[in-house]
Structure formats: structure tokens, C-alpha cells
Image (cartoon, rainbow, N blue to C red; front, side, top):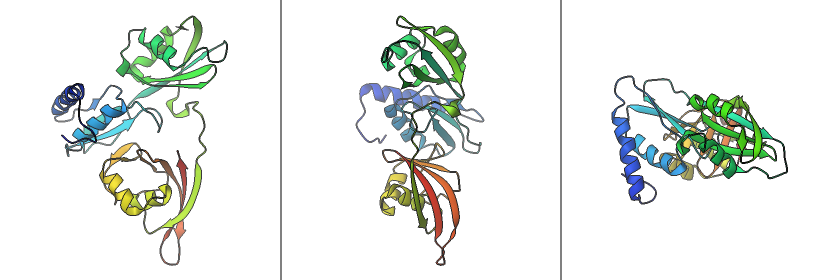
Length: 255
């Protein structure tokens, strides 16, 4: 049982419970977890890397999500993202009247547990987004009518069009010897290829939200690459080869 830092007793208990759940995944069964905080996700991925017959995806509604669901499935299955919804909450009143803690308290007061709620993002002075599993979305949207003494209105919003603060990214152009993950990530993150290999093999990389540990994975146009602590890349265009056979790429790098 190896992780990046020692386990507390509570973490040991959590990991044992998670490993027991994995033992039930026989045949064609799948599992979607509750929302995991970053430490729980780290522990879960350590356990999952020992399970060669299982695949999994990690998703919290948007690439930089702090709290995520894990969808775990037999390795031969096609990967899917966990089923999430976004609830847009709006209100009228003074600037700063409602904050993250206020919204969290109001949602928990509806009878939900903390692990049923994903990220809460206050997008401007009078709007916020609450990310939840699809099964809870309608209940929260109907019943969340007040936050403190403030009346609010809720609407279920397409998760792919979250009104999050915009990050236009930074354009990066260059050439790589191949479309291997380590080569593309080295260009995009400005790191040596040997350093990128260590990060990938250390379980810190994801491609299209799915964890990967092979530096040799071949990418294609439209793929999204993230490395924990380094940010996110979008492979926007593959634009032919140089005379020496190197491949022209266009990337977007997001913080």
C-alpha cells in the first residue's frame, strides 16, 4: 500500500472500504463512487493501479474540478464519464451576499451528504454553480429555494456549458518526433522528456479524463492531456511534417 504520504487511521479505513468494493466487481459489474476529495482520489488510484482487469475514468464536471467521481468498469468495456449535472443558482441582492460556505450549508440542509456534492463555483456576484450526480439534480433544483435569508432560483444546466470563469489558454506551436504522450506533453508543458516520463509513470497524467501510465500512448487531434500540478493541454491541430519527419503541432495550454 504505497502513497505519496503516510496514511492516517481514517484514511486506512477509507481505503479498506474502497478495496472491499472493488472485490465485488466481478463479471460485468460497474461502480460509480461518491464524490472524492483529492486525497481520497489519490488513495483510490493507488488501489486501482493494482487491478489490471479494471479501467476507470475520473470526472468532476470540468477539467480543473477538485471533487471528482470515479466510474470503474471491466477493462474490456468502453470508457464513459460519470453522469453529472450542473445546477445554476441565481439571486438578487448585494455583492458578496452568498458565498461557497453558504451554498454548501443550504444544500446539506436538504438532507444530502457531503460526498453527494461536487464543486461549488461562485461565478459572479449573483450566480453560482453546484455540481452533483444526476440522481440528485432534480431534487436539489426544486427544493433549494433559499440560501440563508436570500431567495434563490435554480435551473439544471448542461454540464458541458458551465458558466465558469474563462481561461482562453495559451497557444503553443512546435514540432515533435511523434505523437507519443511524452513527446507532446514535453512540448506543451515545457518540461524535459525524461521528467514527463517520470510524471506519467507516477500516475499523475490523464488523457481525456482517463488515467494513463504509458508514455508511449499515441495521441490524436482533439485529445486533452492533464498532468497533476502542471495544468492541461488541448491538442488543437496536427499540421503535417517537416522535411526531417518531425510533426507540426498546435496546442492550447491552460493553467
